[in-house]
Amino acid sequence: MTRRHPLWRDLLDDDEVAGLEPGLPDRLPRTPDVLVVGGGMVGVATAVACRRAGLGTVALVERSTLGAGATAGAGGLLVPEAHHDQDSGGIVDLGRLSLALWRELDDLVPDGVGLVDMDWLGLEPGPGLSARLPSGAEMLGAEDVARLVPELARPVDAVLVRQQARVNPLAALARLAGGLDHVATGVDVTEVVARRGRVVRVSTTAGAVSPGTLVFATGGPPDVEGLVVSVPASLVKGHIVATEPAPLRLAVAMPPLVTQVDGGRLLAGGTLDHRDDSPGVDDAVVASIRADLEAALPAVGQARISHAWCCFRPTHPDELPVVDRVPRLANAWTTSGHFRTGILMAPATGRALARWIESGDQPEEVGGLELARLGERLDIEEESS
Image 1 (cartoon, rainbow, N blue to C red):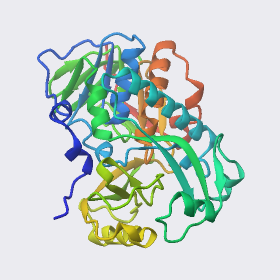
Image 2 (image 1 turned 30 degrees about the vertical axis):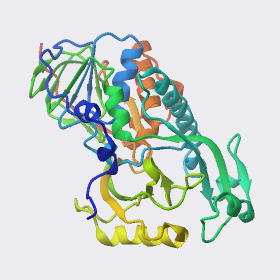
Image 3 (image 1 turned 120 degrees about the vertical axis):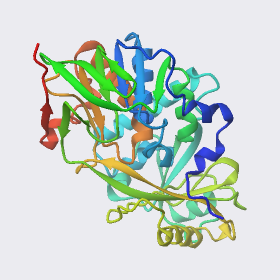
């Protein structure tokens, strides 16, 4: 029977499972220096970056469990070069920086974050990628590809990029969160109160908090009583499947077609189901992913699909994230709309926010990711003094 939830949760150990749902600690700080709202990968990475930057007491609150949203459903691939012919150079550079930061975190976190190195093969590269090869990449003809991946039914030209990576997103999230002092799950933010251009109080279901700095990392833009950031945003559904251990060993990852993960399982999919807003897994999409996988890799044979799941990825119309200070508020920041790159970009986004909070100056690497490009409208209720 195919399980209708992400593979990742079934690969966690008991400590990691517990780490995703710490609940409400006995002493949630009431005046933290930094309060991060949102317990996905971007929120946790931001809290970790603020702690590493020495910004004082850092608290994080999440309305559900850590990683309950798009993080749990992600593929966990850290492949900035896959965006080389799709996105702006600045986004690719941000992804490269973030991959380097992932490697730093893997060294710093006890027992690592579970980073797995892999090489990436971009089949039939677009003109942008083949014309502007990333540093260290190489073009391969179909014959070279056939030697590298003999399992492919129809070898084609490709670009080979080495030293990319992947993680189990939930395991990495739990290990990162384990290094934070104040994490609370099952806590919802109900109101933000501002006075004279500063957030002075955040009401939550666990009581009021008066943070020195407030960061929203909630997937979509902030939408809470007292603070509404109105920008175009939406959720795009996507499906991923995982197989039982397959009778082949791939030398490279070829997302979105296939990536081999723990125990020889194959991960495939990452669809964009723009017209589907239903919450459940669509069996027709799963069957299509399976058919494409078997057509490309006949050696997959009868390896059964063990997991099939879907998730909704937050995005803005230009498919670029927001990383910005909230206009008219000196001590509030927001990040949203990471779409298909949230796991990859989380460490770089978190570091940029921590540096911005510390210095007051926008880091160069997140230039162009401001709210203003989307024509934002703010609804901020100021409390009379």
